Length: 451
Image (cartoon, rainbow, N blue to C red; front, side, top):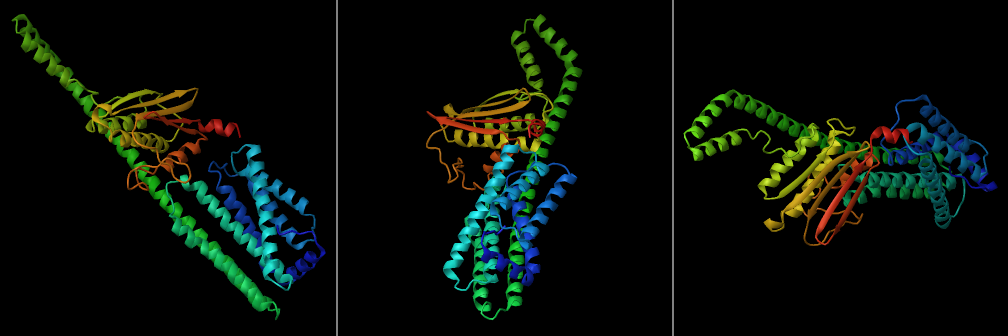
């Protein structure tokens, strides 16, 4: 993509074609990896396997190589074709609106061109002699910058995942491409007078491979951590469902026992009433009612196992803390949202509300939880009083006051991550000592149909 409309650039490129054929191919593959990382950083809802996606990628790779070896000198035409190809890759790979795909494609290549212009100007200031080396140094440097930038973008966009990377680790990671650029620049200075292209080419190839492996290993480790924490969510969900199933089994057995003993209870009760032992009869009635409290700890009985288990479990915790928890659950048994996502969203919102309420005097400890479905869309609302100031981090996200904020639950940022999965909305309102968090989720099939 490193295109400048100048006769001198054409001369450099022809020299480079003869001397750096292997490096040319590597640069094309490196460009492809940059684009793939950029695209993957914005979306997760991939389309299933299709021939058009691979065909579009093939056309893109072929076009990049053609630009490198041909005499194409119209940067505007090259830019337009690149944007069009990225747009097609977007549309064949992901469920995405056309306007969004076109915007993201244009942004990528606009920034890429600005990066190349900036690198070119910097090299003019630091390098005296301009040869074919000049072009390859600029090409490698600009791609290293873009590769680092898209990985930063990916991690920032995916910071709503289950893992957050400490800033110090990012600084250490950033030093690798910086050191690579420094080594390539100085290798150029040392080898350009003698024209030793072999040493420069090998050094550049090895450094590019080192950068690729470093970022790839980093991504794989991050994904491994995310999978581990995602598995923790499923384990928590399974534990809740098992607990709910055990409670229902206990309730069923209790119902059978009460029914079996009902005749005896009624005969005894009738005898007490007929003999005028009213107080004794009242005690017997109270005993029957106490034995028949099948759903004494169940405030959610929608039939949806995940929602009911989670809310009823959280309700039992609020009772231990002296919190008055009001629940309004109006949903069908089956809803088109993953149980793990519902556990993350609802569980963290309730945890945050409990955290805020437990710091209040006991008479002020109350909260409201509402879960409803309207026209297929799921609405979740959690409302609670609070005291003090609401703290936000540098990204504008509300912070937990717990010391272990990174591992509290699944992490506050994972709520937004799960909401974004359904192109949903997370709204927070607070003031006058009252905080309200509202989540709106859209069914996945609606997202695919509208793309």
